[in-house]
Image 1 (cartoon, rainbow, N blue to C red):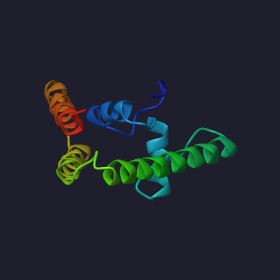
Image 2 (cartoon, one colour):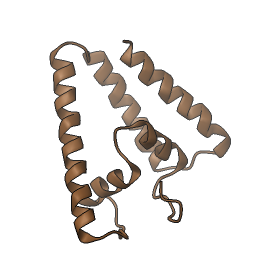
Image 3 (cartoon, rainbow, N blue to C red):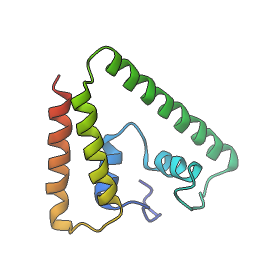
Image 4 (cartoon, rainbow, N blue to C red):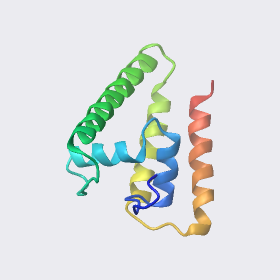
Length: 120
């Protein structure tokens, strides 16, 4: 996360991003490309388009990974359901305020659900 800039995300979303394959800047760029975030980036045009390309390649690799894991039976239909329900909850969290004293509890639940679904 950039030290001098204010984050576009609440603490829980920022913590989820840190555990993901993406950086906060890449998520901002993906949201901007999907017209889901209006922000100006304080980077050169070339650096911005490099980040766009990197973000696109990561999303493509993520989709290939999902197809592969699902196709090989590693990611099961129940796992997809759990991920979908968890994603819906994260969407609610993204659009609301969570009391700071509850943030760790929320992250523990998310982490537990993801680890149980992974079960390797």
